Image (cartoon, rainbow, N blue to C red; front, side, top):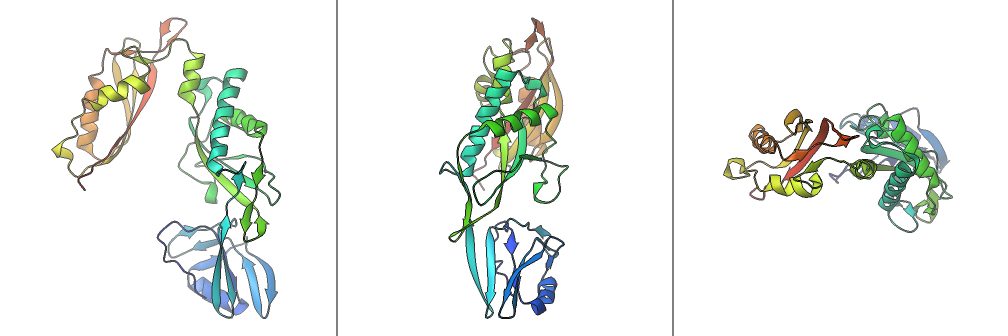
Length: 304
């Protein structure tokens, strides 16, 4: 059998249809059915298999919820593309925006503290052929298969809040379709919860830089002082540095989480340290607190 793999994009899951005697050819080509494979039909000597497959040559994993289906009939493949489900007629990402807004609303109404919440999370749920949703699940480093990712597990309070928000959202899902037929589909979303907004709403004395929200004042200040010059002619990418503002306004560098270049890291650290004395740490009951801050800056080099 033949599988068209010309595209360099990440391959979506596959449904493989092959004759029984072609299964060995499938395995030798690198696509090996696992325990989730099942025969879903037969005719004219052709067996149809819906497979969760793993390509042992390229280490690409494909799960049961397929975006592509290949039909072998007389030795010819025909491809049909699954149309993903929609929410209220719009793309799935709009459901993610609704979920984020509802979570923020619940945090303020029900008292979910910002310091109990995880900012970056991933979730998954299934939309069946009638547009009904399965229970929400959280995806992180502890998960297996397609649910596995690089995110740390969400805190219990985050899970509680997001699950409540998920269950309270109204609206209608239109199921995924394969041709004219409705098919089940697993939706996976990455969400950034508005933890800083929740903090500002819950804390009357938030972290300030030059008397303003750091998101509005610190980034322009830093941008004007970082020397991103000819020394970095071939350097570009994201710099992510975590640091603390101490109760006296001084700076303590905690961790360089990500950076494309050591010299660029050194330059950004120089500017961060020069911001000493310009910060007002958050206060609790009027007492300054040691306050963490995550700086994320994308450096775009147009010279290469």
